[in-house]
Length: 329
Image 1 (spheres, rainbow, N blue to C red):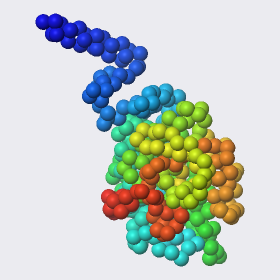
Image 2: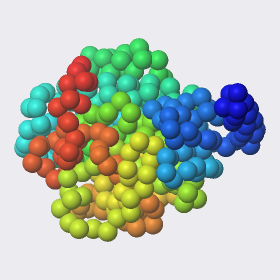
Image 3: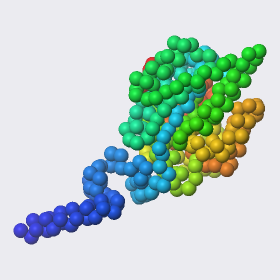
């Protein structure tokens, strides 16, 4: 009888404590079952609350003060050129259009996963294209529309009297920065040879909310963990995201996520980078990283489908063949 009475008393106290925690927005964890009784979840469920709080086991709760309202995905496409200014084949040695289509497939999958986790976020695609056929553009836009997302197509004409394809590529980059000034909140600039894991965009947005709330500032987030980051022993800081570790970096290519505020703050420097050739091309962006925080995922959330021997290519310790196969066009 005493044991039954004790159990009833314990259950009453537990239920009372759960109600109090719900009122004040706290969370509890039953370490014997790894359940979260306040939110009726377990350790395998999404514990964090987008726009409100980030929760990591062992670290506790981080209050979100930087809520994300919208994400514009700006994809720079060109289905006719293999590698700009290079005479090399990409990993898997397919036609360039195949990399573009798989990039779009992966982004729409990832956007659906993001929308499922961030119910209130607005997502829009913009395709800034150079010299792709009308059939290819139609296939890209149809895929995005069929997945339930708004999209638009902005063509970029080839620069006449120039044998340097980089000049047209730079025009595309400039147009992406000008378009970003019309966006609402977060912007993901992405090239059409980055194939993403399905959780990529959600992990990036979770990290953006958390880290910008911690540091009280806008930041940069990458989707790729580049091989060149491991060529030198550079000092770095490691942070915990939702399901991914992140490291601070001071270099990247031109696939990155940031905010409209950052673009406006460094607009002249970004436009200069897309107008005047530097060595490396991203020199201006790296100078911006001296003033702003940039984070790269560990392991990678996307694969960069360039030549397999490139220092900017496929990410280490990543199953790039599986990611490639999962996004077949």
